[in-house]
Length: 499
Image (cartoon, rainbow, N blue to C red):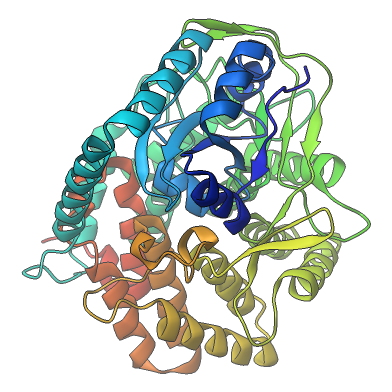
């Protein structure tokens, strides 16, 4: 259905418009594959009264979370869609995961009244929020704790405590694949031969493949399941998820020789080649919104209509992951076509998204590069450069690592910022550090140290980990990312069990 709201893109121009008009900015953060986001076009954005209220009181901005992960990370209210209200200086007034017209209408009225009549309350609220954020940031680092190989023991305990021994996987509904946990368990098993850890990993792999997350009709894995037994998948397939599934199922195939794991790998790759591969560029599109029956979420019935639509955004992080997974599959399965596809994708990626003397861009949309300088993109590119095993590319990886350290390291505290220009608006107050990005960065620096024999990069990897020594034990299933980074930094020591 046609939107009656005249959306702006996330840009400096949109915030300049807000400054000139004196209006706050209403930002809608959504995902291409999110059915609730699509439902808003029927329930809200096509409503004349809501559209009129938005145009009278706000500068409306629409953000694709996949294309702007920096915006998504700072303003998302737990899930999609999120409606966030910002000042013209991009300070958060309020945000909420809104799914109904009544809630949205009330929010519009409330923010309009407060912004017009009680601006001092907004200033006080923003100050309180910034104080809380600063307290949260200060808790990330515990100066009394240094990253240690023995921390892997605690991470094993955390993962074991979260394992679902009834249905496989980790946690409860909604159920997600927990890639890092599965990979961590497989890596530890490979080093120390703990069959209990292997069983936790293979139970998760078997359940995802057999109970609903894998699409046996069309290939590929769905993003998640609403049910803890994996039986009610959401109608979305993401390239990044396919790449990670390929990695963990290949690792399991290497360890166990289970032919079903090879079949899952081959099926996921074929799905990507059939549905997400852009033959004109040689790279892969971001995601597919797959057709399923209707279902109920957040009390609203969602109906999926039409066929299987593809989001044609090309994203650096997911393409890098896919390239490495294809290289891995070519090696393990002895399939030369996979390596040829990976090489073509990598050449295209370097040409279109990776300036020789600057940071990589995040995505390529409608023939244009977009969003430069995100840490996650640089890390994935660096790992892909190292993975190629090419001397010239190794030199490029060193140069990239030096740019990351020079431009994203926090000069005062351990850890690295997640973007050179947060939000793309020149607002340095918005700089922050991502747990996930710093874990991946530690892995990149540690791998680089091994490749070139320079321990300086291992020390910098430890610095990235040190930025989160105060919170990794409370990270739940995400602690596995810390464990994977520890294994890269400390090598064989990280898998030693206590005597």
